Each structure stands twice: as C-alpha cells, then as structure tokens.
Length: 64
Image (cartoon, one colour):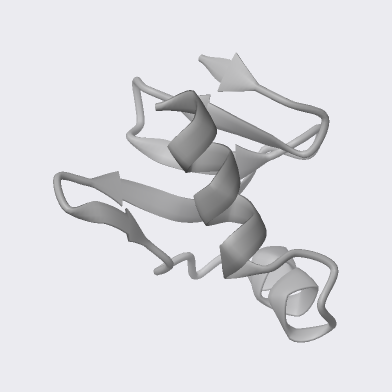
C-alpha cells in the first residue's frame, strides 16, 4: 500500500482510497484509473471540488 496524506493505493482491492476515511475513489485497471465509485461521500467530494480526478491521477502516476 502506498499513501500520501490524502490518498492510498490498496493493492489487495485494486482501488485508490481517500485517507483517512477509506472511501473508494477509483478502481485501478490495466489501462489506468476508472472513476466508478458509487460511494456517496466520494461523489459529494468530487461534486464540491474537494477532490479531483487530476489529483488522483497524479498521485497514482507518481506511486504506481
């Protein structure tokens, strides 16, 4: 598992999760990230701009 203060990569579930809450934000696929979370809190954070796909993609690219 690789982490920073906002996100962590969970290799056992193949997901990126929000720290420290453990909310699922994206699925790691063979072709990159799939932003398919159905978690209500995650959707709320995306909608209000607290987290962005670009932030998560940048984190993933630095830590894969």
